[in-house]
Amino acid sequence: MERIYIFTRFERFWHWAQALLVIGMMVTGFEIHGSYHLLGFAQAHQLHTLAAWALITLWVFAIFWHSVTGEWRQYIPTMKNIDKVVRFYAWGIFQGEPHPFKVTRAHKHNPMQAQAYLAVKVLINPILWISGLLYLYYNELAAAGQNPDLATIALVHTVGAFMMLAFFIAHVYLITTGHTITAHLKAMLTGWEVSGEEEHK
Image 1 (cartoon, rainbow, N blue to C red):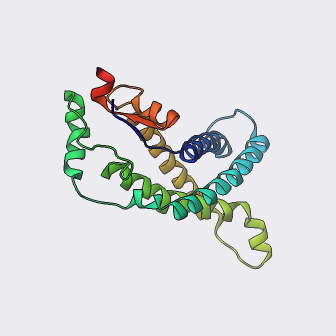
Image 2: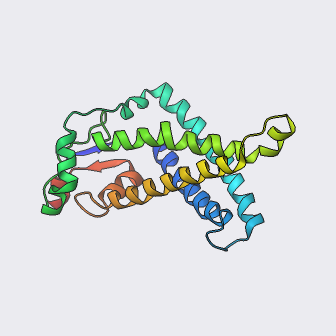
Image 3: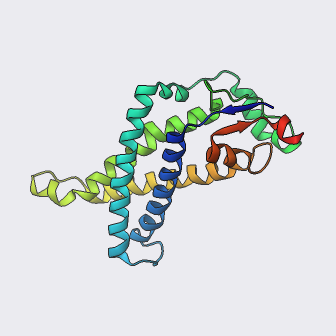
């Protein structure tokens, strides 16, 4: 039976804690934006700010962990075999074909995953971090003689939020595209990846 321990305890904690915080920030953030009324502006703003600091703290720990363990290499973009992966998601997945990428401890993510996760880390997260902090400390910056345009900050933060929402929706959908509908979910819960051939036995 081929079982590979892919995701460490810290990675699973980081993943699920990040997921809960991101979901909480999207729920409160879109309420602050005025998309709906659920908690009220004041409470939504308070929870959004608390979740933001918790998420920033988590990201700092995650960056440190990736740096010292060398796991940052998992996100190095590559075009090797990406044509096969693209073909799989565009056609093969609907024909019941096996995934062309074999997960290993050294290569946890297929080329499309690695590029998507890298985009989140170097594009979406910094957009949200920087615009969110500018938004949070706008009054202090203005008092110090800095006058960033609040409308532009809000627009950039909202664009970043929609980018994160788009990633979240795609991520949840792709969770269900393993050799069983829960295969990827089980791997992120237990840390163990089980080959499709073995689960079908």
